[in-house]
Image (cartoon, rainbow, N blue to C red; front, top):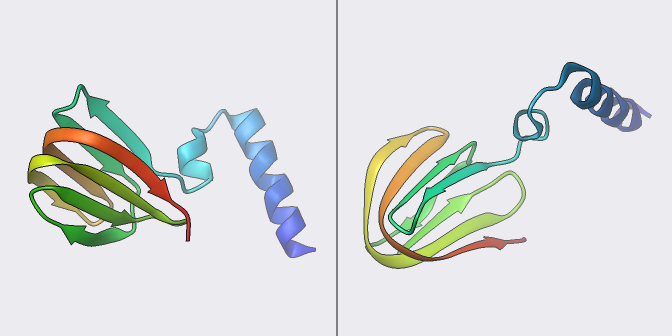
Length: 94
């Protein structure tokens, strides 16, 4: 019952308060500039990093980014800015 009420309240807030879905539904926000920059907000932590791969934990699943010459320019608890040549961005469901 409480879960149903929570979903109803969330849907009402999304519709009537015009809040962004990524905020209300705890989704990641991903911003890419070409193939050279990717900025990810609202992740749950870094799983792996190399110059060819970055894997982040999300609320539901993981985000896998593959490419070349990766450098983490900024990293904060829920935000990361990655630079390099990005070839693939993929969601992985658990």
